[in-house]
Image 1 (tube, rainbow, N blue to C red):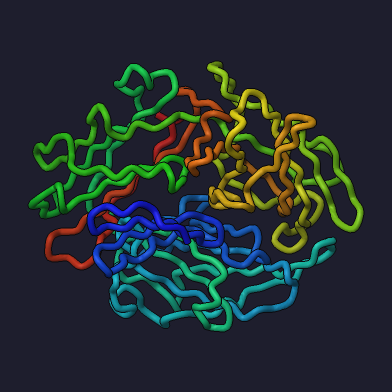
Image 2 (cartoon, rainbow, N blue to C red):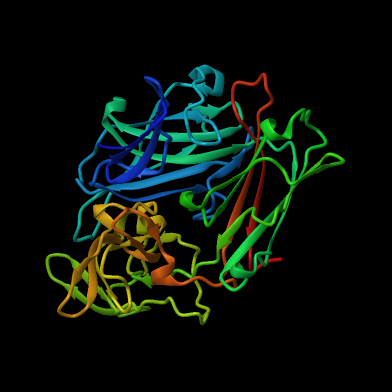
Length: 431
């Protein structure tokens, strides 16, 4: 644990939470709770998928009291059966616990056991695959808002294996939004701007500056979140968020990708496939892409999909392979490090995502154990001060196709929690 600077009575502390950096703030001697993040705490847990069952890989948001469900799936590489439980906790719009009693936000049991599991078949790497769908008859949220899903072993929350964020929507407002060229001249070639309009006619909003929060993020990436308060204009039951400095995002670049749906032939971006006691896949050399010229390539906005063309059911017969990435250093600075990120590793920047540099060939290398499928990924540069920025490696263009998630929260002065009252998904390729 490293202590940052002391300023007045406030402390800012950075801690390593299995590698990912989390902020904790305190006033005097009372510490605020650590915000919950998507994380995996046990290195034996791989290939965590979590989405609305309406579409594979969909954003994990469902309507309150609807028939919609979320699916959690993951593998345990220890191979044997383990006794896993899960529970839910309500959070505010900043992902701190709402400190509500379980009975207030959830009906059914306080936790439930994951009973749907399968052993791998015909794979070189043995594993056990687990799945659970909820809400179900045992666990069901009662109120809207942000939730954290916790999965732990033997009914003991001190033996946590993973956490996942999700959203329960109680629609009470209309959300209008569009992606436009930034007003700021210096961002027009590299950025994208999101303007938002909230129609709140059905809500009592006495003070928009304190009652409403609008959260915008790019491609489900938590590090891109922008929280909008106050609105630029208030007029006739509408809140307008379109200030010149508001919701300006780097357009970034299309994600890189590779395809290991089959291990019998080389497919997209595959250089060589080796088979010994396990599979090894060597990807083609990745160049630095920080030129001003934009080149379109199809991607999945950072997602990954577990798929297997060599078998019948990727859940149990998809194999694990060591995938070797190598990045040509190009004109990158000499002081700092390169990390590989994507939804497959929760965009987590830690020692597990760090590439090693080989000065003899002027390249960066990393080896990751990944299940068969299609993966999006990118590289990010981290300077010696710990600041991460993907643009020096990947570049940024206003033409890049991105998704934006717009979430609207409502909390009047007397309320004890943040309601999620509006949601809108934007895609820059679909007007």
